[in-house]
Picture 1 (tube, rainbow, N blue to C red):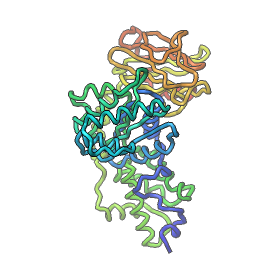
Picture 2 (cartoon, rainbow, N blue to C red; picture 1 turned 60 degrees about the horizontal axis):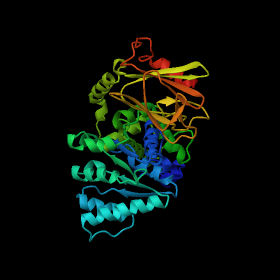
Picture 3 (tube, rainbow, N blue to C red; picture 1 turned 120 degrees about the horizontal axis):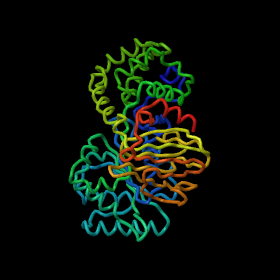
Picture 4 (cartoon, rainbow, N blue to C red; picture 1 turned 30 degrees about the vertical axis):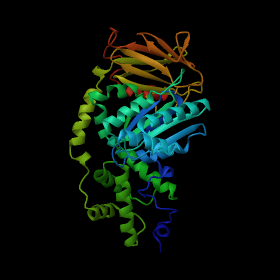
Length: 414
């Protein structure tokens, strides 16, 4: 009897080959995809997505690409240990050129002409660089220059850099400040938490025809999490090995003992996230994100009624109808990703993300606008009142800045 027939499955549930059909939409994966989609809405879209090995970046990219419309022309460069000239050749090759006998100045001219031609034909051009952690600083500088190609109205090349955590470290280099300033959004895809990990396993099993998930006994999940740390690729490896062990023993479901046997067969030790290092990193993150580091407060109101009060540290805040946004507004008049707030050291900027009904500050519709303390931003029937906590004397313990429960309840009421 075959493996699939033994478990009554339509296909292997824990394969290691990226497959968008199996993609589990955790909150952070949904957020990363929303950031990638923003490159299409915004003329100067430039997004960086990082994640640990096996966190699902490639599958996420495939899912994103599968949904692009005919008006998008894109190139993917995955071989990244290249010189600047080789990188330009790789990009042009992906766009259909044969540029290997050209000098660098000719390559740049070919690319510029191609971008302007596509813009004239109503096309949007997107460049995706996978494994971007291997790019040299010289190539990253070349990408910065490429991102500046523009018509008299707007920039014409959208860019997504995807890579491992080392890419974040590279971008912190003082030599790359100009490149970082061009980037609109940066997001790191971390491992799944314990709850998401179980739902991830349930999801993959359901895709191949076992709903509810009666393949894995409940006692399995804590052990799986202990040895994988919530990293999808490790989860797949361990679950697949466990199923093979069960199949060899002619059993029908996976027990905790089977998971332990699979761990022994793989020769694994507990994942590093369980060694105490992860706890220390989380402690550092918590200190950075503590209420007294918050600099802005947003109160959401509708028809004069206050629905929620949330405060934020410096960073980017996405507002919209999709639950993966930081400020979630459930309204038919609000777009899925309607607007963003960019909170910096010197204030806050609100920016429309090509919403259907627009963004208003006071009575004026705006595309991008700096906010002053007390400004009212209108999205459909909802109002967002901005308070700069660095300038406002009203920052108190009761302002909602530290009350996570109040914020969560507020989100449910929207």
